[in-house]
Length: 295
Ligand code: FPP
Ligand code: MG
Image (tube, rainbow, N blue to C red; front, side):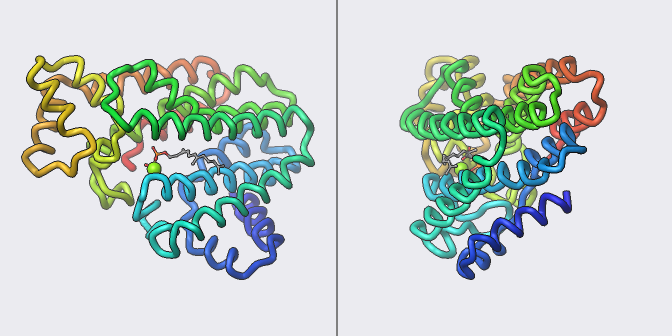
């Protein structure tokens, strides 16, 4: 991973603007899941660290913009750029990282470049769907999963597929692995929003529903409730809930086992990815760590 960090630092230096170097230095790097995946799939390829750096810059840019869209005050345990330096700066920093990444991407083979580029259109589409869907309570599981695929899984899928293409491995098998890893990763994220503490998450807990996001545990809860309780749940959507209301949600989720049900879907998707990649113990290990994570 040091090779990736070095590449990222080099690309930031090449932007040649102290303001950007400083702002970028204030960001927390995060889990670097996408970069790790690329290095694991194409460890021997000389351009794998560069591809990993490109994907991390794109991911970083998307989070800068996402925090503006979500009005988020923290990101990965530190103050978000929109909170510390304003939304305009966050948008412009995102634009610079994103376009620098694409400048580097065009030097790759067309199939690799197209795979990554197409996924960025998809993730932007997914973000728009997410925002639109948050306007009212959504109880449609398949619509929710379609959005998750676009918003989160597509860049992970593209990272796995593009690195497989780099080294001539089975691109479709790796794409399926990445897609399911991405989906189960996001479902675990949705679960942790409800079960983990603010300290562990590096952002406020139980915040998805306040932001309007009806994640799987909420969708499954809605399915289980009687009409009155359904209406009560819908009335809490996008509200800064009181302690009692938060407790009501948590107790009902416990009673109707909606966290377990969500976790089972994450596990099913992860198992499918594991089956597709059973001969690669390192990729299987990434899945296992991801599903067991607590933040
Ligand atoms: C986080 O979702 C958001 C994403 C994974 C994608 C955001 C995509 C865009 C803003 C499109 C623009 C793209 C570029 C490259 C500039 P979340 O809000 O559910 O997760 P969070 O809790 O981590 O914020
Ligand atoms: Mg967000």
